[in-house]
Length: 100
Image 1: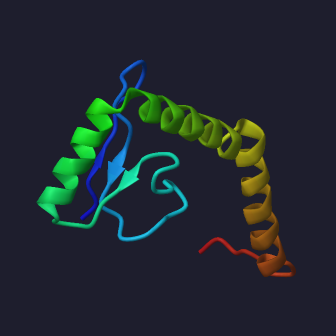
Image 2: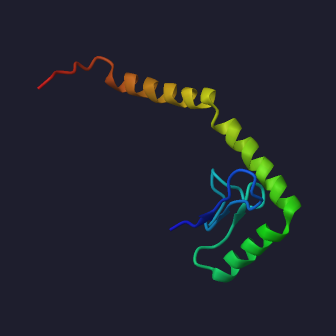
């Protein structure tokens, strides 16, 4: 189970995740804080760090926002869909679909 605490909008608390390593959504110390699963002390320390270090939170928040908008723009999404459609078309080329 993953725990992610995220505040949206103008709040200052940034994501805290219990992923065991860097993932493609959150890089530790860059866009948020990653802690070990079920490590209550580490989760508490991350929450205190997030609540008391405004400059770090703002930096991580801006970085996360920039990364999110860059990686999830409409153009990027459409590009990903086109890749999937092309793969499906290649796999189904020459196949006749029949209604049963």
